[in-house]
Image (cartoon, rainbow, N blue to C red):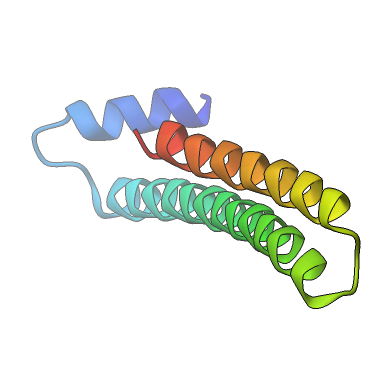
Length: 93
């Protein structure tokens, strides 16, 4: 019997046996751990993208570059930051 069939049978029973309760708890814990790991990796990627965008915004202003290059870099970095923020809002929605 597959894990899914066992879980369905254990959840459908009025009073599952102690062994099935342990199984149900193990499945729920495994699912929660997988969901948390996925959430943590998404948060890490979002944070890294936003940090890269902010670094791109700050780096040209801290170095001695011509005004044209500074403006071009700031516009590109601002677009990158806006894109990252848009993705954060879209994924969270």
